[in-house]
Amino acid sequence: MFKGTNIKNFFLIATLITFIFGALFIAYQYKSEIYARLNEWKLIPQKESFTELYFENHLNLPKYIITGRKMDFSFTIHNLEGQAMNYPYAVYFVSDEGRITTINSSVATSSDGEYKTIPVEYTLNTLAPSGAIYVELSRKKQDIHFMVTK
Image (cartoon, rainbow, N blue to C red):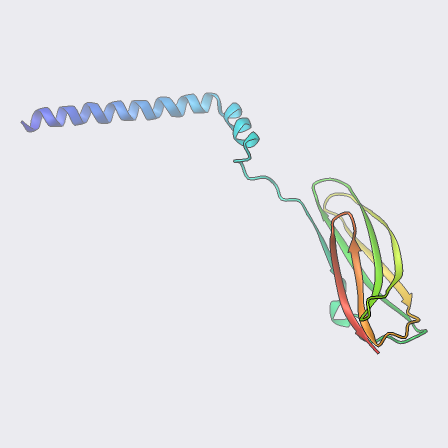
């Protein structure tokens, strides 16, 4: 009785192994087509693209509004989008009352992987007791800011 069961199990296992190796061989033969289809269905991980935006020397950012005095800071754009990019940006002061004062705006051009550091010099002539200075990448809908007070 055991001999017949062992032979059936052997043939079952041999058939299963043959089927698996056959399927692997076919998959190997058509691997580029399979990869293309899986990629089309978004089942293959895609390279992430993004932009880093940060202040240089963030511990020494201006803390106080000094009316009429020139102040400065720098921010950096790091392009990790996988292609050259144009980054329209705006730098502005927003008072606690919501008034906006434009400090600077321009476009930074950056190739993939490049760091672009932009120095900003400004003089605030405002009566606001406090607010925040924003750097905004308008096309990326990304911004950073720091608070200032009198």
